[in-house]
Image (cartoon, rainbow, N blue to C red):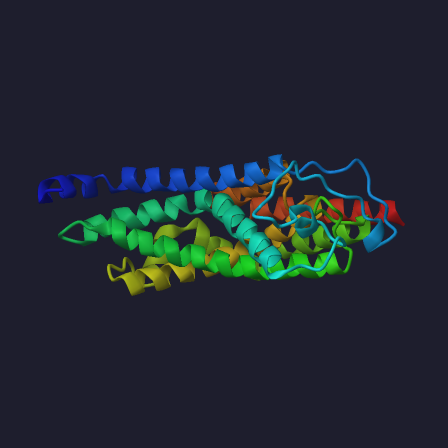
Length: 285
């Protein structure tokens, strides 16, 4: 590619970044939908223990010889290394699909600021490093989420559809997530996500060096994690592979970060979560 052609591409940084984000998000969601489509859960499960849990038909999904049904549902057998790897991959790709739309405004701003700040106009590489740093935070979260799923499965708190196995457990998670929506930490982290310009200014602005952009992306990802981790815990209530539940949480995250209502959306949603959790617990008593 000639220098002139390269410069023309770089001047279209917003279009390039947008196209890349769309492709990444579409691929991640396609993977999640493919997994969900292959899971055919039974109509009921016997709650008598590990040996009594109903079998899960995974629609002939081989996954390289791994018993996917035993992996995603609790009580079938102990997880092997391949099971941990598979569940981690599932979480990591799901986080990419859920969080990419909400970070898009930050990435587009970063690329635009970079083009104006640099005489040679090369913001795309730095934006890529920023995005990698951001995703690194969610990959680390995916490791934690995988461990949490393993523990909950071991304690028989998840049913074969990877949702809360009891109304009391589901209600407690909803109440905890709802209360977190009102905490000062949620507010601090959300403000950093809602105001990309303020975030850049307070953290030294655009970084052209790969390591600097990577660290800045990690910083932004940490704020995003502080804002959204409790919402991700709700996946254990409605089902880790429940596509409608996943989409609902992703939309809530997007609305919180992009709609200029301050703390209104998280506080309203927090009250609704806590109320739903209390209703579930009371109904189970």
